[in-house]
Image 1 (cartoon, rainbow, N blue to C red):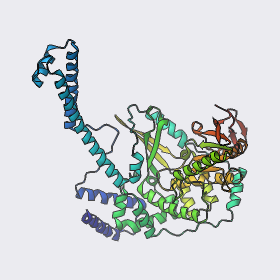
Image 2 (cartoon, one colour):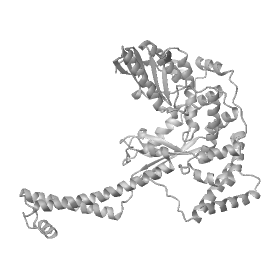
Image 3 (cartoon, helix red, strand yellow):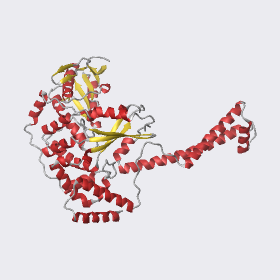
Image 4 (cartoon, rainbow, N blue to C red):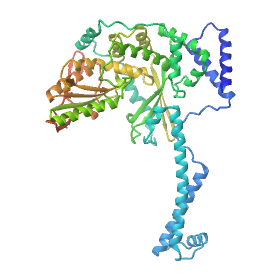
Length: 533
């Protein structure tokens, strides 16, 4: 393979001699053509598009399963003979001839022989399935470690009854094509702008070839590509295009309106979350983005994260995108420490769990851009993201036992374009002002002379206070913030707990008041924390 790839690189260098430069689309076509020729030269057949349709088991396995089923029937006949029940004469004679026995003689011995034969055959199938699973897990671990740990012990759900494609399109288009805007007149937004008004703006320089190569080399070889059809492996090994790719990236960053339509189009696969597969809401969307888009946004992510960290603009309480931390484990340990301190010291504690409904899919684009500007991200990055947002779109794919469904192209007018390293950082930035609002209250549960009033892991928020009144103040802030950025709560996952002198005394759901009243910014929802449901 190395020899063939070297030959492809030399051929690309010759093509470059007769061209002044390549656009991103031309580079994509060139890389795809090179990858296609290399695989043909090596005799590697491209993988066919897979569905959830069950594979036919090997012939030998089917034969063994048939033998086991036959022996179960024979065992049932012998059991009936032992009981003295009437059995067809032909079936009895067949068993007598097969096992060289006589009626009502040595029946227990024959039954034991059949059981042992069934067990031996079943063990052979078990060994085959165990070896197959072992091979697949090893391969997954080598190619994608994160996926291996994610799938470990996970139950696979078969989609026997898929929803209608019309219902799927209607459900997701209502979420993604809802072009909403945040409340730009909110006073707390103006206060947040004052907090960062003296912050120096992020500096910018052109992407270097070394920077592009580093981003390419850090990517996984065979992660599923988007509609560009190019795996990271080819970008890594076709080194002759690295310099041209860097030039093309810099060009669309300076002129974001030049970015091609295919660059911002995803392929979204719907994976079932529950056994109720006919309901389109019971699916989790996993989006595969074009590889070239993911490489570019990974460069932007590195620069943006470094700037935010250097200037301490990311909340320490948000562990969703915090590097060098254990993420959710860190938050669980802090939560455990608070609860143990409450019990040991016999103190009062009020806590609440807040979860946003379709959080990633419902953040207004206007709010994302506003946050980037407030946190002084360079206009080159802001303009590129703003121009990309106008072109974000995806196609839904749902694989089921009898085939697959494909939707129309759906525009992403609301929410974050998921599938790259930039999306979680954008989401954390969108919720960062809430951290400032909560910290400014100076309320919370005090431990080791420090007050803790909330913990964040992406969209999962847990609030802490010394009593219910304090907690109500914190939840009012969360409610106001959420209203103004047009995000809704997932009420089925929100709850509250009250501890008096270290003992749990009350738990309740956090429910929204059914009465809505209107202000000039639209309907407002109030959290009621004292109502038991």
